[in-house]
Length: 462
Ligand SMILES: [Zn+2]
Image 1 (cartoon, rainbow, N blue to C red):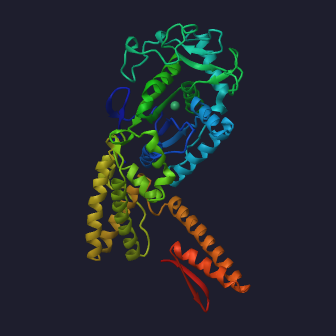
Image 2: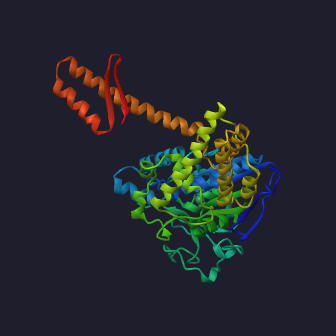
Image 3: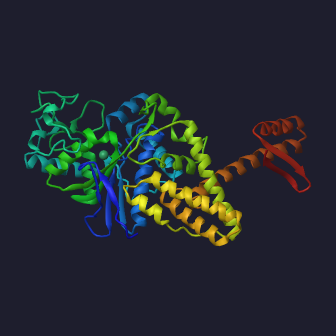
């Protein structure tokens, strides 16, 4: 692209030139889901924001290794398992799949690797051993292992707090902790809970330890970008840093955090979260429209959710899509995407998507003017620039991820209507006209119009 990408680093609180540790390569670790409930739009916003970053880095010529983990062992999963009366691992698998499906519906590219925490217990034990050996951590004999935070001068610099101002953790039990603010790397097994053996007793990993061990396993001691939602800065990311730096690792060079989806100015509440589940919203708008909406705000700005704003974004997106379709009709084929310079400039400024969208709007105006004037060259330029920009935002309507999803919906619909029509034909064949009419009436209620013709029965959505 030529121009220099600048990114905001939470650790330094300034926007600076992005310089990868290794020329031409970028390693990213994004904290993935704790798989204990179906994803709502707040969860997937993070996936979309970092997918845009990844696509922009690739378009800028970088080879990107993108790691997004799955936290498949955690207190919340155990609570949910008791509630749903399922084994904890079945709960984790069920919701991991729900997340995978939501990411796919929203065209979030699959990560290079998607490690599960339970698959990396060995690396977690190795990290604890290293931290105990170098005096950063201690195992007081109750089966827990703690990190001694006072020994680390840089602790709390990411969240800009002072250790003396820090409130002790909720589970602070001074029988075993040297300092109430020391946090657990490993938690001793409780009766009935899953556990893994360690030299210090059986138990399970703390959430923070999981991410340090997995980031290190896939990206090495030092890597370029660590991402996550704003709420992860403290304690999760502070504690990841504490563990990793105590281990002698450089760890993340840049910390990036996406803001929340809010309702009434607050982080989405759990009760509202149910109605804002991705599968629920996708009954109202298409995946590409929801992605367009969630990706439209700057990743560091809160996105205040409303159905009106979602609908408005969907309508705006359909205008762009309509132009691309008309352009394709006029030109006889869909022009390949090229990235408009103004769009690139905006993206290089810490992924300034709102400014990038203004560039798209301007090109769309020019494109529509060119369409009315039957100016093929003008239409071609606008269409390829819009397509190039939409590809970075993950919203290219010609992307096979979207078109194949729509095709598979069509296939299912076609199969179901055909099945009903076959049942109707069978009823008629056995002269059960009441049943045949009943089937016809029921499909009519769903808005499917049936037409009996000499060539057989045709259907359409009326
Ligand atoms: Zn994490």
